[in-house]
Image (tube, rainbow, N blue to C red; front, side, top):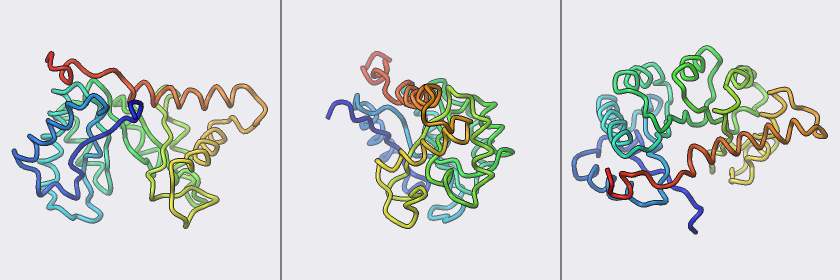
Length: 218
């Protein structure tokens, strides 16, 4: 399946296991031409399944590896946005791009990530009845840095919330996103153009040709 693209990384839940040996395996995996990003990586202070210092160290090392490989990073941030943003600011956001995965907070939090040039992906939480702050945040993202996602099998969008999420459910999130951005009328070409833009954003960020590093040229 040559058009399937892959993200590879050490999730913060597993950060306590990150060492030189694991990084060597990760480097090998990143050389696969199908790999288009390093992720999900970041910080998760909700579950704290790995010590926070271990999470920060694993995240820092993987930011450096993503930059070396010329690949974007896909971020998992949960109750840790301040530390995550500070660490990325110290290391430098990868030139290939940074995708803030499954954003579900408010416009105040979103603003600094947008200002830093990040891509923002919205999943099921955008559709939740009590998530008006997420919908307000979605209005702030530049059209060329806006993506949709599912986070399957989690975060199933309305009206199917409570069931197992699948890739096909992105249609509900995309429809809500179009509504939020002012394209409620299903009959207008503008709605289709907006949705096509989100698709092109995903292709531009995550369906690139292999990097020079992946080809062994860097």
